[in-house]
Length: 224
Ligand SMILES: C[S@@+](CC[C@H](N)C(=O)[O-])C[C@H]1O[C@@H](n2cnc3c(N)ncnc32)[C@H](O)[C@@H]1O
Image 1 (cartoon, rainbow, N blue to C red):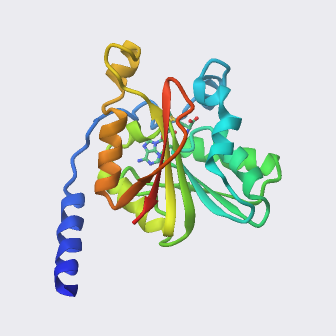
Image 2: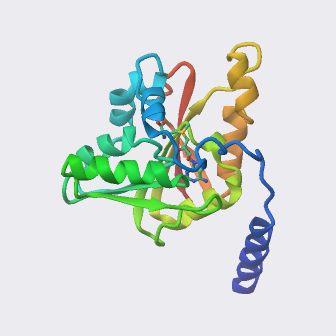
């Protein structure tokens, strides 16, 4: 049995190393040198964007506890990082993880200005969140899953960073041709159920969560 498991992990690891981009170029805008972070703050933190309008409700639904260690994966301008830092308190920790160095620098500046010492920024790679093994109890992604070019590798790295029984929450656009806007249908590659299948295949089980958003969904998974 042990040998079989070892072989399984070796083969799975080899397959992930070979994983091809599912959406080449989707992050080009964020990876430009001298990113105009002000422009992105205005875009991500503006009324009318559903996750911004419902940010407090999203935070409540995360059920964060004081002292928890959590990650905001694809943290962007830090909209949720800052709220998560308040929720886990000074004894907790929020890793703000992103592939864009200018977003990471912006969050570092915001954390310093707000005197939030429980935020640690992490410049990750497109294939890995680069967090230590067993370092977090919850990973959160808002409007980011569809930006993962190598979702299999990224989700495997999140799974490794989660402690036993840790959770992954995914908030992302509903892709429902005929219902969703043309922009979403073009920009977002997978439906909610396809995303759920990918995450379950990576060693998670879906756990019940109230789906209270319209343009986006809110899904919760537990590490198996
Ligand atoms: C649309 S923005 C969302 C930002 C933020 N979560 C929010 O809702 O305001 C997507 C973010 O995901 C980041 N991103 C893309 N691929 C990533 C990856 N593999 N790992 C971590 N972050 C990634 C981008 O750099 C960008 O900051």
